[in-house]
Length: 510
Image 1 (cartoon, rainbow, N blue to C red):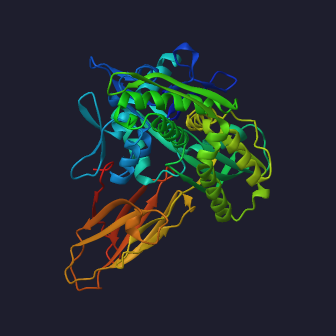
Image 2: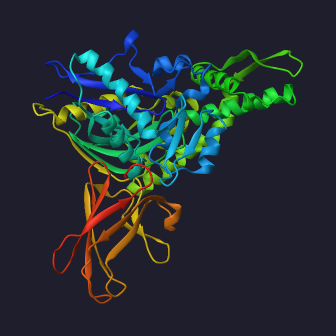
Image 3: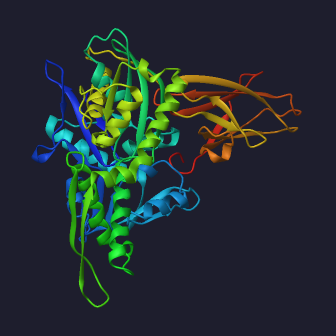
């Protein structure tokens, strides 16, 4: 049986790891040149060649329209014009909607792809690197996702693996994986750990109780539109404002190459300011005046400017921490350790905010960039037949799952932070004489109004026994898997006959 590797499929960078050797040490799988992370970027150059990872990143300044990055945020979600408009303010590749399915499509190299297809290309690159390193084919993996990913987004990750024949044997939440990296092998009797995970594109906070090799999530929360990309965008806005003030009438947003150069330097400057108080923000020959005179960007970006511009983003992370502590019925002082995960947690202002909220300095025992992949590899190893590492994960769903009632309200079947796996059964009766079908719309989210939550799908159960209204009783089972993915079945409560199920989902289940 082939090895199971752990994969951290990130918004900006991805990483893989494996447990190997008689010492059963976790090894990050190196890419060529000794780097352990692979940029989550896919591109097609002007000759039609596919480029993935570092090769794609090296050319993205000159080929921005055919370079796809940061797309994980939209994977498994319906096309939303408002969200797309926000993304188009900073990303220059084309985003469109698949007719009839509402699937988000991106254009690259003259073709349109669904986002699971883009993710599959990143996964293929990771698998190729791992296969070369291990000198063996890879068919199975444990893949991590943000804790705040909903059912459809998790399904999209599974689909991305299926596209390339990679079995995603388990999906685990990124904070839970980081907790494994921290807790396995330490012989912890009982400790409460907060995982503050602020990465390139998403934010999660999970409170996890560790009891030796049992990891029980007490509560989780997050925001899939809050990460390093958003901090970079605040720098971009500042640059554009300063440039426009000095060069009235020149709009750099209309120049995709100029925008990409600014974005690239914004990311590097934000990283630099974690260690420095200020840095030069210089881009020569960014554009030309109508008269043909070259214009430069020549600014100085300070840590104070960055912190002022992003204070509300940091405040949003703490607001989520407050809610999650309330959900878990824990005071911040009851947390034994706080772990920082994700590159954005290197920002001093983020560290100060976390320290102030929890009343303690964050632990330095995990690497923010590597902890998730290491934890995924540990869990992957625990699933192998010959493994002596046994861990138990007791996870929860991040948002409520329910059905739309006759008033358009959300009737919750699984409440936020209920444990997974989980099964609930509900009984329904027919509302019309000789009713042959039962239809229901499933949503996930925390709003009381169903339509403002994420639509997971429309389920139709057909073959209902004909009878008078109210006489036929249908029992529907809602099964939530360990991966946090929902499946449903129904049967006639009186006869036990199961009914045929059809599911209509916009992008990941067809």
